[in-house]
Image (cartoon, rainbow, N blue to C red):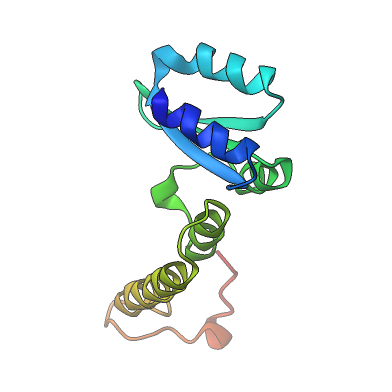
Length: 135
């Protein structure tokens, strides 16, 4: 819990608006007690059966995470990942580069997916002619 205590100290001194700490489930009660005692806003998010993430810090920052919802960090959109990185105090330039790389990867995935419904001859189906309803 030394890292957790250090992150909490940095938050209280105004060095970071929000922190993310991953820990074993067995420590949840102690962490929750400490955050509550120090009146720090927080949100727990399960990682695995044995690990939990806690986001803690300024209420506005934790509210952004609540808005994003309970999903795995690897499932964040490029935009959500960018926002999280900035709130955690990561290097802004590197976050911008990571965001652009993420967009490029997403565009590459889209290229590999069919852009229109395909018929049995592997030709695009004209949605106007067949009046396809949105999925």
